[in-house]
Figure 1 (cartoon, rainbow, N blue to C red):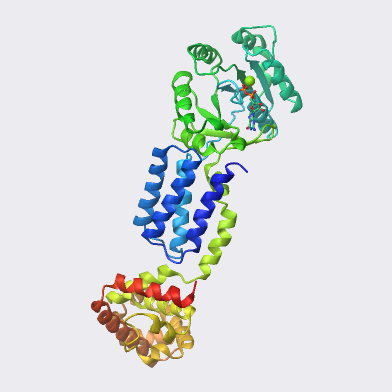
Figure 2: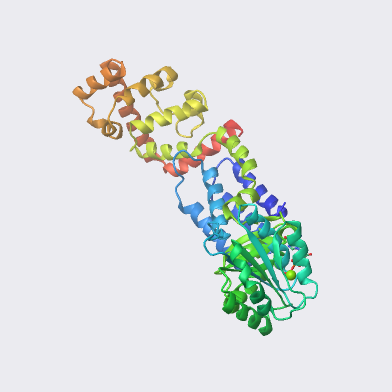
Amino acid sequence: MVLDKLGSSLKNTLAKIAKSMFVDERIINELVKDIQKALLQADVNVKLVFELTNSIKKRALAEKTPAGVSQREYLIKIVYEELVKFLGGEKNEIVIDKTKKPFKIMMIGLNGSGKTTTIGKIARYYSNRGFKVAAIGLDVHRPAAPLQLQQICDKIKVQCFIDEKEKNALKIYKKFEKDFKDYDLLIIDTAGRDALSEDLVKEITELNNYIKANENLLVISADIGQTAQKQAESFHNSCGVNGVIVSKLDGTAKGGGALSACAVTKAPIKFIGIGEKPEDIEVFNPKGFVGRLLGMGDLEALLEKAREAIDENTAEDLGKKMLKGDFNFLDLYEQMSAMSKMGPLSKIVEMIPGFGGAKIPKEMLDGQEGKLKKWKHMMQSMTKEELEDPEIITKDRIERIAKGSGCTATEVRELLKQYKETKKMMKMLGGSEDPTKLMKKFKGKMSKGFGA
Ligand code: GDP
Ligand code: MG
């Protein structure tokens, strides 16, 4: 697997989150530290690492977890989204314009970066998708270069134009130019150097001026790690690169550095090379890439497990509301059903500090299930306004609700009474202690009580 070491460190980190009972600042700090360690080991630039983990932390602390999602899931979602953004966000696929005849892709890059090999991969990729593809060899510096390209093209049955005797790249191009119109896509191989030299820039510029390729793709070997940024930037500035292909991601632990370094340049990563064979190429899609890196498949199973535990968000949000005394029917109902999932209400109440000795109406604790069902029916017969502000429910409304829910008016009054009493009690309790502190204690008791 590509970047398997980085992948497994990140997976372990997220597994820790998925298994943790509650998400708090301590867990977030731990997560951030783990991610930093994993990325630094993959040769990601320190500054980039800190930028990334800062935004993860900022979001994790500031954003409110939406309803129906646990804090754990939401935190993992943030990490996923930030990593995707970190690697460039949306995928940047090359769209071959068939009317160009041919659409031209020119490969540039240093010696040994993988230009010629990548041409075989891209040629195969597009010819498998119904495009008529040809390649042309303009590397006039390395003696064996034209033959290497020819052999690669033969293997995938793609037309190859070479002239082993000619030492002027532009002349070779012009020689075959009349034949290009038969193809949808022409891929141009060029010569590299050991470093980006004036000589190379001059040669590429000359070719650029005449050929005017639709895409100038820079091939960078992943094993150079974070220095890829400088290389991508200097090629971009001197040769006008509009996309990068990061090759040899299969053979290095520094790939995270190369990918993130390229992602911050103005030239997006279009493909990644993951082996020596023609099929070892992928369109670079940050979403899919990060998903696989984090093992979203495995993660989903983990999250499923986490979901089985108590939904601490519902408990916390409603708890706060209840203690402040500003909860309504919907909250009450949700709270009751959340609690009934945890076990008998009388047991839960014992575990809540401060609640143990409180005089909770006996009706609230007895015959919970049946009552909940009736409540649900009554609440379904209420309007939104009534649910949000039960105080407005007076005589006429009571009768309407009773009729609609198949209950008696007395039962509706009972519900209203219960609501008012609970509200009063919660307000009293809330006033005695800071609700957030109380919830923290509540959480501690719960995790001990349920051993999750
Ligand atoms: P060029 O000088 O830029 O044309 O580079 P080449 O295409 O000749 O490739 C140089 C070496 O890198 C060759 O041995 C290729 O087989 C190897 N190579 C290229 N791309 C990949 C890749 O994605 N993975 C691996 N493992 N090797 C690669
Ligand atoms: Mg080559």
